[in-house]
Structure formats: C-alpha cells, structure tokens
Amino acid sequence: MEESNLFIPFRQKAYEGEALVKRVSDFYTFMNQRRSLREFSSKPVPKEVIEKIIMTASSAPSGANKQPWTFCAISNPEVKKQIREAAEKEEKINYSGRMSDSWLQDLKPFATDEHKPFLEIAPWIIVVFKRSFEVEKANKKNNYYVSESVGLAAGFLLTAIHNAGLVALTHTPSPMNFLVKVLDRPKNEKPYLLIPVGYAPENATVPDIKRKSKEEVIVFYE
Ligand code: IYR
Image (cartoon, rainbow, N blue to C red; front, side):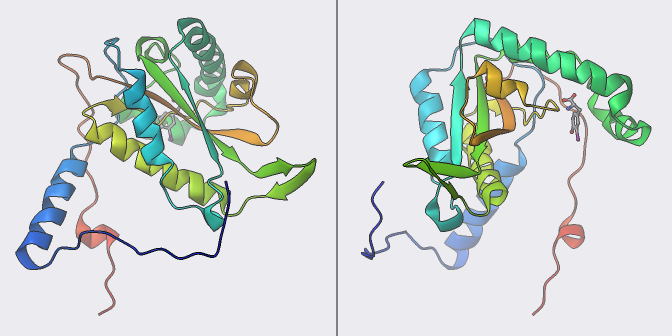
C-alpha cells in the first residue's frame, strides 16, 4: 500500500431540506430494525457476498489509515466445529462461576447459556482481529487507536450485514485466545469479535428489549 501527499477531489452526493430529512429518517427506520440473533438458518450465503460485506467494513476510518484489522471468514464445517467446541468450553466456565451474579442477572432477558449451536449452523463465522502492530523488515511498528478503529470497522460490518438482509450476532466468547490457535493467526493479531452471519431462520424471535430515547442519549449544546 503506497502512501502519497497527493490530494484528490472529494465526491459525494449531498442532500438538503425535505430530501435530507426523509433520507436520515428512512435510514434510521431501517437501522433501528437491526437485531442481534442467536438463531440462524443453515441456508448458504455466497462467498462473494461475504467478501463485499467485509470490504465495506474495511472502508471504515482508522488511525493514520493503518486499517489495523484482519477479517477471517469461516465456512469450513470442521473449523466451525472446533470454534464451537472451544467457545463452549470457555462459556461453561463463565456461566458456572466466572461471571458475577449481577452479570448473569443482566443476561436473563436474553436467555443465553453456554451452548452455542449457532457457531456450527450459521453458514459463516467472521472473526475480526485487531492488529496492534505491523512487522516491517523485522521491525515492529505500532498501529494507532487500534480498538477504536476496529470497533468502527465492526460497526460498518454489522451495517453491511443488515443492509444485505442477513443477520448476525456480535459474540465474545471469553477469553478468545483459542481463535489465534484454531485460525493459525500471527503474533500481531488479537481476536476482537466473533460474528456468525447468515439468514434468519423462519419464525425467529428476539427478546423484547427497548432502545434508549433521544432524551437519554443526546445532549445538545446550541
Ligand atoms: N459471552 C457470554 C455471555 C454474554 C455476555 C454479554 I455482556 C452478552 O451481551 C451476551 C452474552 C455468551 O456469549 O453467552
């Protein structure tokens, strides 16, 4: 990737007035329909779809444009099985003592437990890795604002998945180090999020949770 000081014209369509208000309202309505699912159909999703979704994620802003991320996309049943088994092993320990009582209480509405069958059922698992440094000619070069950058890319990823009419779960089996081994990742990569992706199954249900109101989340200083 070559960097240069060249500036090029910025092109983006702009909107005003009613068209602007309609556009942001429609997008809010669309995005507000996004939900995390813990059940998936096994219906296949083409590789080129996953590839394009990941490239959308990779268009996110990042510290000094270092793009400090790697996305591993897994459809191989044997690898998915290994991930499920390792994740369930950690989660069993979490649910039987590693998580506090108040944490378990907070999770009640989501009816989660240590069983993660969706890790084998979903046609794809995307594992997002953060790259805290790069190795250039045997020299370590730190990346900048790595967690912020990868978080932004993960947000873009979820948006692209939703736009595709697919569903996902932002899953964090903890600890996630087993993913480095299972996926044979280099030393500069740390697992950040594990995201099963696929179609929603028929008759899927989701917890009846509420999103905060604008009064709760916005403070204007006019
Ligand atoms: N990682 C566990 C527990 C869990 C934690 C939070 I915070 C959630 O929002 C959901 C689950 C699990 O995946 O079951």
